[in-house]
Amino acid sequence: MTNYDTSVEHCRGRQRRLLEVMRHKGLDLAIVAKIEHVQWLAGPRFAWTFEPAAALGIDGHLTLISPRKVSEPVAADEVAVYSSHRHCTLRNDQRQSCVETLMAALEGRPKPRRVGVEFSCHSPHLAARLNAETIDIEPDVYYLRRRKDPDELARLKKAIAGTGAMYARAREIIEPGITEIEVFNQLQAAAVREFGEMLTGTGNDYQCGSPGGPPRDRRAVAGELFVLDLGPAFRGYFADNCRTIACDGRATDVQLRAWQKIVEVFSIVERRAKPGASCRALFEEVQTHLDEYRPAAFNHHLGHGIGLFPHEAPHLNPHWDDTFELGDVFTAEPGLYGPELRAGIRIENDYRVTETGVELLSDFPLEL
Image 1: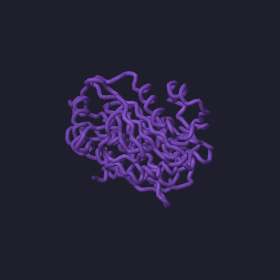
Image 2: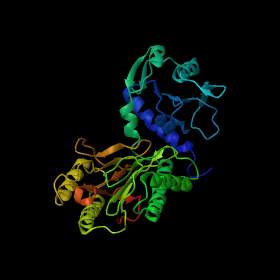
Image 3: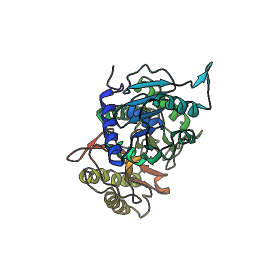
Image 4: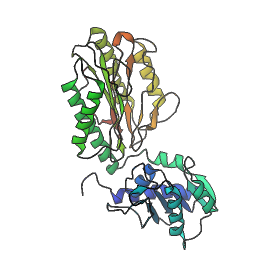
């Protein structure tokens, strides 16, 4: 077993936290079907091609409905396997088969009257079989997911280490004439070497002379800036940080002035972010700071949480009114854009909220 394997202990702890929500809402049963939520509660990571489920009874009994035999550690009292493929061909009716297997596993247990489900993906197959009042627990699960347990933090740190390897390689190979596709390919390879296994997700921005976007068959040009906003996922957990690199290694005075203004933001973040602090207020302070360069040159969110999904709470964004909480893992990604910068600079760091402030998780060089 490695530090990155499923922790049954921490999964059981997450189940207990969900049980508190169930008691508060008067639920007899909670059923989750999103791959991320099944992993968060039970442990195994399933590919997007499969349709698992997990059912947690108010007595603490967890049933995992799995599309395959489970060989890794699992935090479940019962594992029922449905047929997800036939003679190596994936079935397209997996959700129906999953629900049938789940209902069979629940036979003999007390019939639930109030069941928590995820309204965004609540299956009609399940709705037709439950004959119970359903309550949306998806917002509650998303809230519980904000506090990262040690097993989650270990995987996040490994994902972030992958970005460190990617930036190191980028600084070795970026020069005028290299294509964005070649940079993308070599950076993906660097992350795979760091992980020692396939990525479970990738992203985000690999364009030169542009604020961002997917890689193109386009060559880098001297004087341009290469924005690398990287989000590889390790066993389901997404990193997300950014560095900007001068294609020819010679940033202009204008680019360096903008870079300095951006770097100053991290001192603001590290001074202001702590449990109970307003994310919206932090955004507004940073917006004012970056507007000193030029109003509207910073035109996107300041950051967001990361975990089993690339964008989670807390939201450093004027359209939300979140507050930082102990255990949050979030990004801060100030940027400035304009033709004089060819075409912009974004630098992004990852942080964990501690009792007294924040811990920097992406301690990589910031230079252009």
